[in-house]
Image (tube, rainbow, N blue to C red):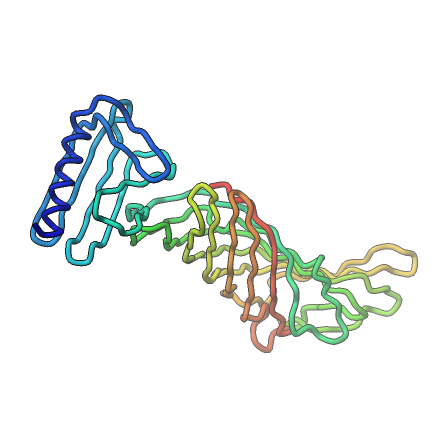
Length: 306
């Protein structure tokens, strides 16, 4: 008698026992015994055989499918309508390691999370000081997003839309000013004590990400990587100083020559509802020849809401 015939005989015997016994689902460390099912199907052809079980006593949504390809003894298991709990299903003479798989799907999500971080400004002019604690970013990266899972595992792609804002603060003996449509470094007027120059602007962003789930599903550990494409709006510049009487003086400008589109290379590490992230922007903040050619490296934290 061949190995394939033995497997089929034991499969049929197991199915009949499971179908005729009057109890419900039970577990031990290695085996799940499915008792009192509503439907048991055994499908066998030349290349593989499949067992499908639907419904148990007290759980009409129970759905288990086992498929074995006879040449390679490859196993595939899927489950539907179950609580997320660890369980195994074994058939005699099959020694392959059981694994869990999830159905491929396309889903729509809303308001995934809010994020807050700090910018470290690179390529700064020598006469200026950009403190990391004063250069900030806040955003909702996936106000609305689509998630596509093409494989029978927990990894997926997503595309979302969000919004946020960036704030930069520069200190030093000079200030930024707008002159003839360009941003230049210049001295404060005579009698004015330098304080700081701030730049702020809003943005709308697209977030194409590859999502990798790590560890067990209940741990909710995930890594999301991909570019954040920002569409920047005309911002505001404000240089602040104090006169000889200690009064604050402000020099403001609008419609800054920002790059309309920038890209941040991003990585987000999630644990349950908490996230830490890092971003590097190879793109300069201002258009070429229109202002200091600075870019940023950012770190921050987030709160997952979805």
